[in-house]
Image 1 (cartoon, rainbow, N blue to C red):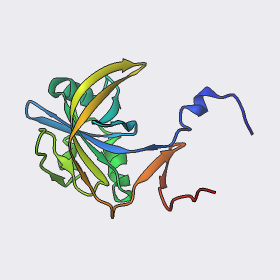
Image 2: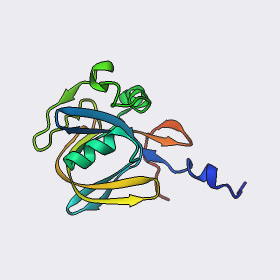
Image 3: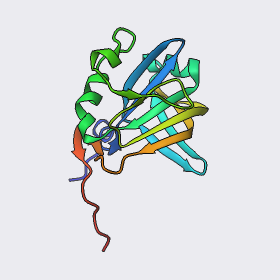
Length: 167
């Protein structure tokens, strides 16, 4: 039944979840980032949205680079854990025994086990409401076709399964 409800509408969009990695001045962090989108194919740009109150925001502003690691279903618990503690007080990489791989073009590491991992250099930064959009140009991307992604809808995880046939 159709009803008018802005509060409910906020959680109604279906989104992927990424593990956003940042590093600056010897500090590094990883955060769960639900708002991660490709916004251009040529060149390949990825936009991530970060609240200025979060530790990740500080590292992103200092470094102008980030890693995007689209979560596989095997990383659902990890995304939940890193999304509920601040990197200001906890070394999430140690605390959650996160397996990483080195990046080639940026300081932040990439996360093993992701569907896609991309190294990005910030090309644009725009404040939009209560978040800031960082648009990064992809310098390098790694894709694992065997991993299965998940999505968030109404605050719950959903497996992205078989493709729906067009009629």
